[in-house]
Image (tube, rainbow, N blue to C red; front, side, top):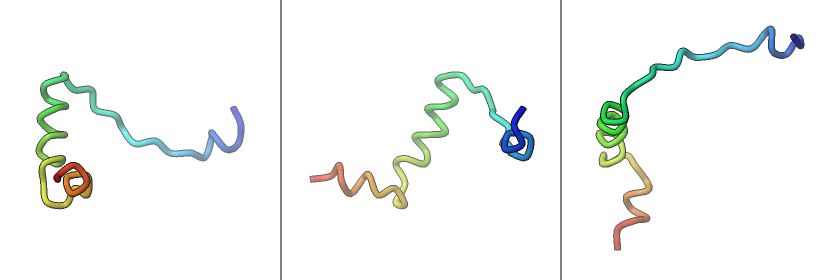
Length: 42
């Protein structure tokens, strides 16, 4: 193992079903703070 890998930290990963993942994503995506909405709107 390299010294770089030995010192790195990783965040835990939650495994979700497709529906649960979509539900979490959709709640954030459709919010006012998403700049992609402005790009997608005419």
